Image (cartoon, rainbow over the protein chains, first blue to last red):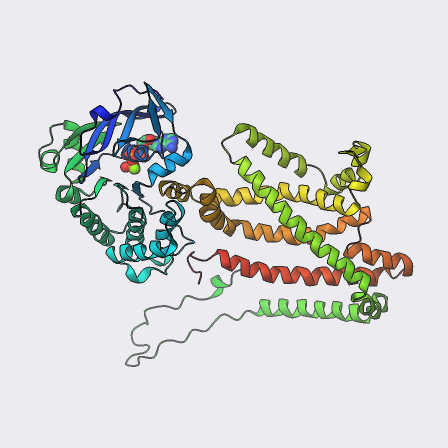
Amino acid sequence: MSATAEPAEEVTGPDAMVEIRSVHKSFGPLEVLRGIDLSVRAGEVTVVLGPSGSGKSTLLRTINHLEKVDQGWINVDGTLVGYRRSGNKLYELREREVLRQRTAIGFVFQNFNLFPHLTVLENVIEAPVAALGRPRKDAVAAAEKLLARVGLADKAGAYPKQLSGGQQQRVAIARALALEPKLLLFDEPTSALDPELVGEVLDVIKDLAHGGTTMIVVTHEIGFAREVADTVVFMDEGRIVEQGPPADVLDHPVQERTRAFLSKVL
Amino acid sequence: MSAQTEVPTPSLSVPPGEHAGKEEAPRIVPVRRTGRWAAAVAVLLLLAGALVSVVRNKAFQWDVVGAYLTTDSVLRGLGLTLWLTGLVVVLGFALGTVLAVLRLSGNPVLRAVSWGYIWLFRSTPILVQLLFWFNIGALYPQILGVDTVNLLSPIAVAVIGLTLHEAAYAAEVVRGGILSVERGQLEAAQSLGLGPWRRFRRIVLPQAMRSIVPPAGNMLIGTLKGTSIVSIIAVQDLLYSAQLVYHRTYEVIPLLLVATLWYVAITSLLSVGQYYVERHYARGTAGAR
Ligand SMILES: Nc1ncnc2c1ncn2[C@@H]1O[C@H](COP(=O)(O)OP(=O)(O)OP(=O)(O)O)[C@@H](O)[C@H]1O
Ligand SMILES: [Mg+2]
């Protein structure tokens, strides 16, 4: 747990929502992240592309501390994730504090991970009530608004398994939004969906993007990246190979590896 | 066992000409299952024969069974069996859940202790364990300044002995249930900022219950019958109450039948209860209402 790069405040620009600096992460002998540097400005959408196994999910998971980093640091909205800095040391935070940090970061999983034994409404109000201590009545009112926003106002009483994959993922998005996070992380939100259901989920995400939510989206949907992303990041073998506006990275990639990847996906 | 293979697949396309002009669908004629009928009749005849012999054999002494079925001492024994079962199952599963959580914890010492407990209590017969607790006074004549004999009545020994044994098995059942919950569930709960207790109580345990309830129902029924072992330390449960009577009257078979009928009745009720509990925890899964 040593910080290699110069940590924290001075590097953080005024409108940087996420600052990732020389993050390394290994699973046993396998180095999955080999020095990641990335900044995401508030209100911007960053799309992460890359072949399977390149470390995209791992990177997302380090941002809300589901995975601990081995080296480097991550700032979200000016706060170090998972650590407290004192002098030149990073002290690991207690779980309570990490949990509190996580409430500011929404995470949407590839497999939705809705709670199958709870109704749609209960799924959405769980975190506001249990993690933020909101009164149930307020949480229900807010949840109903969110469900309407993702087009599922009439499904509040249903159980997840009674919904289509697209509907389940929209509930999962509503559940993440219920904490009013400053940052939303999507890990291949449409990869588990039948092709005809991809659109309805992407539409919801686009809607959020236009509403100014800061987000990082791992996806293979190049069309979505072109339309919505402010920045496209291409990862391979644990490194960021290339990043920039979609018009550059997608249409005029500089790096050979990016070109090779895009030619396969497009 | 499946009769599926015997059923001829109805052909979908009707050969031209056979039903020319007529739109009536061909009728399906099932295979005659002569062997199946013969087997059923034979088994029913055997059962009827057995039943007749049980009713007509005077040695069963059904009148005596009837006379003792609801006597005070038998009912008191039944009562003790019931509350002992309830207490042992509740305490056993409470301790078992703690053991399961320790076993799955990140702390290697706690993991090892839990493993050792389960290993020890599963590898000795419950009869030996009960006799051991019954004679614990030989090891510790006094506990906290009180004579062990006064502190541990036979009933207390029964509760302690059965509970510690039950907990070892319950721990494995609960652990299996916890492991059956998808990892993503825990990650989703963590990413939503839910604390460890809330994650366990609200997210993991209710889903684990789906896999816990069937074996737990088995254990409950096993424990109900298993409590009869306390008769060897003279605790007056259902079996021991029946034994007390037949030691006096020598009506051994009818009194064993009294106990049997009660065990069967309670077990049947528990099975019905298990059905409803399973249905409750199946909510939200495919096919459940
Ligand atoms: N908990 C873990 N333990 C061991 N290895 C892991 C773990 N999580 C991920 N890995 C490995 O790390 C590498 C990167 O995984 P990651 O899931 O980040 O890739 P990805 O870019 O998201 O790939 P995909 O497109 O397939 O989702 C893979 O080789 C994977 O097997
Ligand atoms: Mg991935």
